[in-house]
Length: 268
Image (cartoon, rainbow, N blue to C red):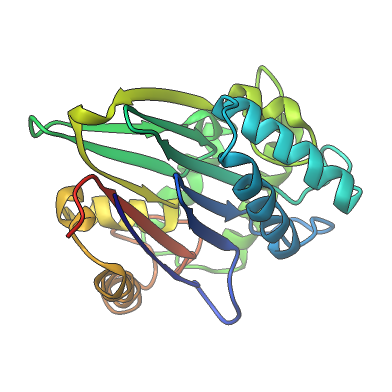
């Protein structure tokens, strides 16, 4: 197996995306951006969650149990309370000699390519069901040229308040935060390793722009770490130079953190 990865912050500082490769897995996290007042930053949370997942991924436990146990450990370590943030998406890939397991919680994605040329995408779109009218409104404003003005920022603040009320509820959405129960709601799939050629794990900041520009995921999966970094820089430049106000690709902010990791079955 061969793994590669790259990450690019959306702004100054290290950003809130994290990734790592283990001997038998890949982990990608996307910490939540604090927009509403009182929501703490996610950097400390994603650092602790990455460590907790890395130490548990080597176990034989199912991926839902891995995520749940890691969340509980981090919540206890950081003394977190449900509903107060911070939070993070989780994307996992774990392989054995015979199988590949994938899991997503939140809006990061896992894209897999089969030996027959098919692509399978594992994604979690439950967050999109929260306050859909507000989402449509801010995206339509961007499409009409409003840009990232004060009204846009207020719309995002109002939207995040609604998201907080719906967090980790059966009638809302599930995300890594303070309660391990969320891990048991991760979306899973399992594959025979002989059926796959490659996989790519991406946070939404990278995935959405890659999809918008029509870059084939098979091409993404063929890149090494340096080439992935060049790809992320290209995405960042496109946002800055071709779509600075989010008219072509409506998004919450001009630049989000971007992370992509890849797995290929055959060593290059």
